[in-house]
Length: 146
Image (cartoon, rainbow, N blue to C red; front, side, top):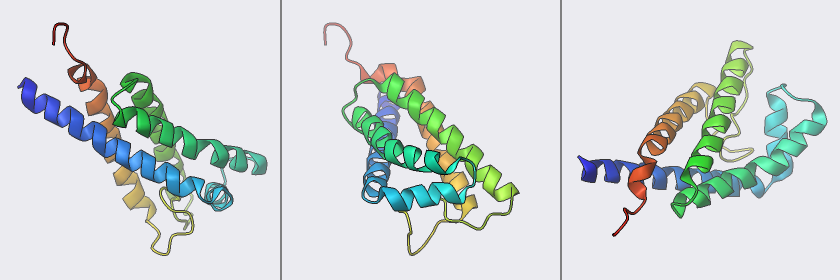
């Protein structure tokens, strides 16, 4: 059981690391476009969209790098769980209000935008991987004497 749980832990951790590093890098390349994607949700005052767009990509990259390096897993996973929960709430809010927008999850102004329902299911999947990583995080630490 321990070996299969370790495989699941490291697999989840590495998938999440790749996803959040990638997402952060592509958003950081065009902060203005990303701020526009955030503004499309109509949730925040105008200036906040730019503040969020300036911080979020680097926070995603930092958490992704921590997951990649198998360091500070608990804080990185907690931040990503909170972020994904906010993303899910924003997606559901946009769906309920009937907004026809791109989620802005990976590439601002993408030529093939994700539907909000696709993004919602993807974020729920990320929450499952994050919960798995959180639960199994102690398996990634070496035992004393190893």
